[in-house]
Image (cartoon, rainbow, N blue to C red):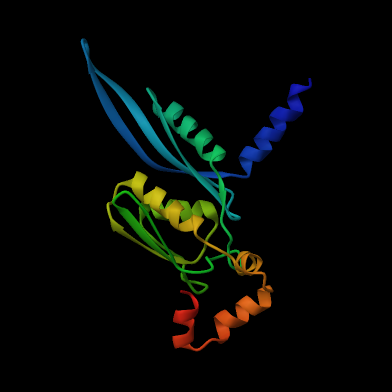
Length: 188
């Protein structure tokens, strides 16, 4: 009976996450009797409130590969600061291998303007308004990793203020009140 609460707790924790299957790859291994097929799955998991992760799983059957990928994604969650709970704080670039992405915040009502694998990441993250562009490869694995690289560089005004030893209002007023020419030099 001591196991029931833990099992129930895990189910509740699992229910708060949504998972998106991004890609399934069928691979064949040639053996003496013919070909042996296996499957590789890429899954993105998120709580739609700023936490997201991705995982990769391989198995002989598709459901088992998806289960492994989902477990790996839940172990690799990262927290991303969101502005107003709907968009990002600033533009970032990310890359992994030949995959390069540009991710920009967008005004309310824009929606998610992003291609396949990147869209899955933003939906799982809970971002409602974002504009993203993928440059370079269209390989889903590299696109997801490049998107995560750009999300890891997201910083909220609170994080910047803490790092600089300033108040949040100082950081926000500098960002919104500076003239255009001053803004470009202030960031460098």
